[in-house]
Image 1 (tube, rainbow, N blue to C red):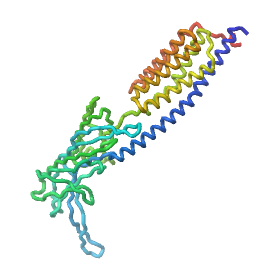
Image 2: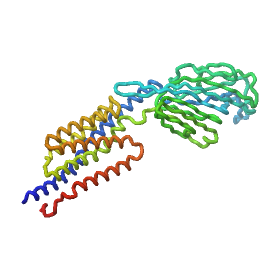
Image 3: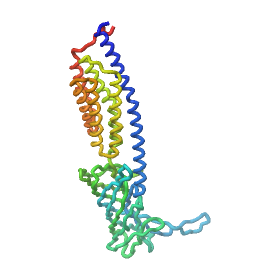
Length: 412
């Protein structure tokens, strides 16, 4: 058997080995993914615990009027009985305005964003003839919050020019209004100040004929959701402004008309690391292909063990990325982890290739990591960019191997 035949058989076996090795190396990548999930769950548990201790998700309701009265009912014996009842009146207009400032609490290595909200609710009620028909001498204004623990000050109100302070009652926070001057069709104007805190989300319940929200925040990455999206929004690196307008006609038929803004970190380091591992198969395959290409062109044989060690180095990158990103921003963690991996592989390539071609292999790994980081930061278009890059890589491989062939006769 000639030297060419031996080389041809060797490269064929090595090609099969490379494909199997790339598949087998997905096992340590899978273990890294399990570790990512475990650390992400621990982070979520810490976040939930801190959020509960702070205040949790805060719900903002508009105020309501409650008129206690006695209704008449006739029992089976024909007797007329008086029964305590309450008539609830929702506001004609409720407008929420205010500022929401986000800060970060630290627990161990985890950061938990929380917020403080300084809000004002203004609007008015109108009493109908039916409301006044049951009205006697008591009229209350009620207000509710999703998390009473979030209150940082007493809730004060101005109603028709008179100052009140809400007090705790058996059925919520309320004030008893001065009934003087109430008449059918008359307006009850109110202004309420609320200072509260919360975590994760700030939610609004449009329990009014016309409900408006206009808030500002220093949080640069809000996520809007629920039954209604903002009519207008302006999101910048310094924060956001958002306005909602909801009427009873808009909300008609909605099972749960709540809308909200999430004030969380949009993508955690665990999600980003998990996304990076999805490209592990591609990176390992392309690095192995580069080494294989060097073997084919230079006829310099690379040992199977050297492929395996290179593969494990590429897998270790993701463990480095995960551990470093828990202490540093993801971009810095990626730079450090990829720099360590490229440096180690560069020294290894020089050791067994013993030529300037090792610089080519090292540069290829560095370019691959830079390209994957670009894909991770592309919100849209990553599939298109990735497909075009693969086409370019395949074209380059075809170009460099166009004159290097192994005939069927050489493999016999």
